[in-house]
Picture 1 (spheres, rainbow, N blue to C red):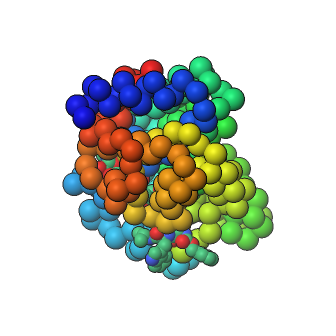
Picture 2 (tube, helix red, strand yellow):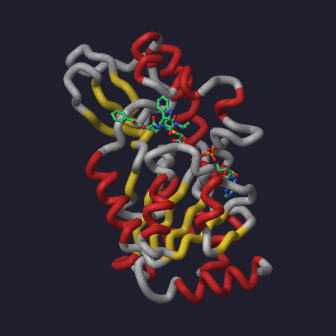
Length: 241
Ligand code: BV8
């Protein structure tokens, strides 16, 4: 099917039934927030396991914070792109039957006015104390002291999910329930490599959802797709409205 006719077929199916959008780093690529595994990927110089793990943080909190302080600066300078804005518009038109699930920690969906976002991997703008557990928002760009300290004296970490860490249970439950009741499951800008998040595509597919993949490149989830839209989020998503 040509992209245009596929877009028309998907747009028609957005008119009724529950819609779920499941996003990854690719939707922020056009906001100049690099993806993880692309050619310009964040992790081309670092292996994720060497940075995005609790062990890495505990062994060298300053190094890991230098990385995330740099990333926060880059994200702070970024703006939501037409892909983020299109999802916010779809939600605005059908709030009662739309759920946005994201793996992204950049907060760009929220800045695009998406509401009630299911954040599977946390939020880079929230910090949590590894001693007293207190968590709160912190927008400082850049941090004055690395690593930042809690008023209890403990070290603050980004409130994000690292490799080997559990996803927030309430967010995961919301995501699974949405995937199980979705009529249309839009998979946007994710390499579908990281679990358990990537498992949501199969859950949706096996619950009878029609899976739509929006990605310029192939992914392991392609075999589950009813429709493949080979293109970028910033180009394709506005055309679904
Ligand atoms: C868990 C937060 C278990 C940090 C992230 C060995 C040891 C330990 C764990 C494991 C292991 N083997 C497997 C595992 C499980 C592991 C996992 O899945 N690993 C993978 C790599 C094999 N998962 C975990 O560890 C998870 N926890 O399993 O806990 C457990 C069980 C019981 C008790 C305790 C623990 C936790 C996973 C979360 C890890 N945190 N990030 C940070 O962000 O810094 S993962 C990281 O990758 C991101 O958060 C992101 O969410 C995730 C997926 O990446 P994508 O978003 O898909 O981005 P990517 O760059 O890969 O792809 C971009 C796509 O966009 C591409 O397809 C590209 O073509 C496309 N694209 C590009 N431009 C555009 C575009 N699309 C549209 N438009 C464009 N313009």
